[in-house]
Image (cartoon, rainbow, N blue to C red; front, top):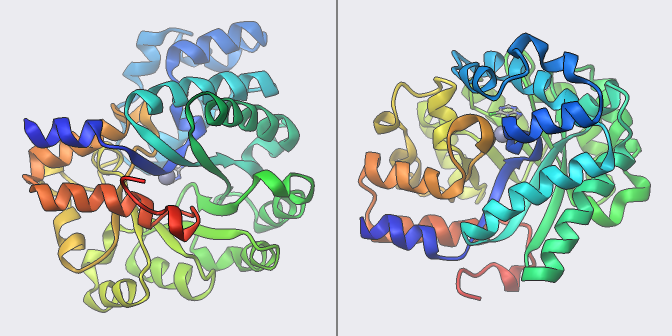
Length: 330
Ligand code: ES4
Ligand code: ZN
């Protein structure tokens, strides 16, 4: 189909990708062996097939269980380098020219991996891609909402030395029953440091979580936000305030946020006048990278050319690039 070909080959930005969610089972097993931590994947028989078999999720928590298990194999800066390099190879093939990448700060710190290892490894791979093929990038530290807010605050305080390479913070993890306002202190500190602020909200959680992400955390973008369709006045607020949504259709489908791809509310969100972008979220777990998310929506929602080009343009408009660089064909 022509539009799928077009979307696949046009330059684009990806704004919602968790680097730990790009850990394919093959690399996970390789890293487990080299770090002598094969036991962390033993409940999956340390096999690619068993790991992939476990990627049959019933909700967000059932995914997070496997995701947090698997990322235990990431120990050293070089592990994060290899992981990021592997993702960026796919991104390059899919014509991603700009990426805004999340990593899970508090979770890694809690299991004894230093932020310096995480950030140095990811950053090296990003800088290589920038030098080799002109990628532009931003790096955002996600705070895990199921962990204590003090751990989130502690991680934001630790950003100092890495400030040149950390452009913002996000909020991810188990959404219910962890509303955004619990993390007001961490977000206030981040904002005072000049960091960009985004948050996952309205993925599994109800519309009020989107309101508090906007009004208490003062986020500039909402990650997912698909449940905003349930609340017309919230849609209006997102439109008037020009708050973009980073939507991840394959993720929503695999985590049963929507019953089927055909029932995804992307058109309602676009028709409400919102700045919607398409992203992969956790491509190793949800069956596709960014172009597969485009093709899924083009096929299942019968998007027209204007809608597809609008999504591609929005990926730059909604980015944290300099305003004069937020252009599709720059
Ligand atoms: C995530 Cl899909 C999703 N939702 C919330 N937190 C996450 N962390 C990684 N993927
Ligand atoms: Zn996400």
